[in-house]
Image (cartoon, rainbow, N blue to C red; front, top):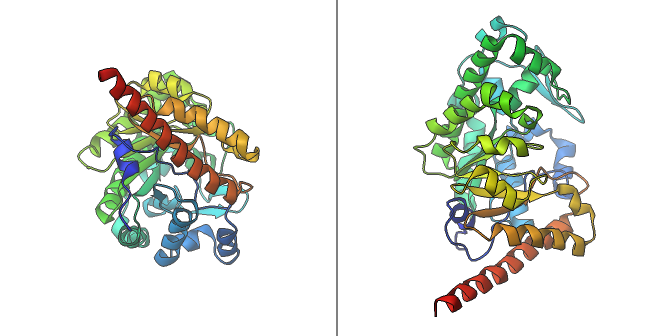
Length: 357
């Protein structure tokens, strides 16, 4: 089977014959086969078994026909290597045994040892590099999002402890951001060396910040990460998470290739805010997938129509898949995106040729 590089070409704002599509959390709980695996193994146990993690990663590629795979892993995996004791608790999320509260806690964090502590993740990437006929996206959690777990001790809706540290002890905050930035850089480099074909930085919760606070407390670290990785040829994606539309105008200097958008900002407006030098990815509200198929297709059509007006568009959700999503609907949606966008791109090309005759 030939290699499908449509996702890579779109990431670089090159011409494509149809819009590439993948879904955040596409290897997840919506799939009955995956749920059976989870009855036997926890998320971290799956991650620790390269053959199993690779199989779970490949399942949506085979079942849905998507144009990219995303590594089955968790954003918390690398923090174990820097000295954080945590568990992924069902129906809760990451729970930290000893949350960060002081300068001493930050000082204890050690440099990441990817080869020594996370070799199972690198082996999973190597397996997938051999087996896949689509690009493999690897990923890390961005420093703010990781810090929110490390400081709060578990998922939060208010981020009160995180913001308290940020506002009242900025020197400790910046030390933490620097160490987490180093962690992400080393982790991403190891992924790309092992065979990753693209890298996404998930900043799922940074939309909790005002633009001024984002610029002051977070953006310098994000800029440093992508500057440090800019020598890597693989496309890089920054996903600033949900409710992040007001942050988009601050991202114009990032040395990345793609900006992920959530559903609160249209593709057109998102492009206006980030500027013309980036490809964009998004941005269907995941819960539109609860609607009848004709409604889902109407939403997808609108997104595609806006996306193909300029080079560099990847169809995705504005956030991750949820457990109640339908595998059949996702399969049908993927086919629709491919078929409709192929027709629309061909028609636009014909119109352009006609104008030049």
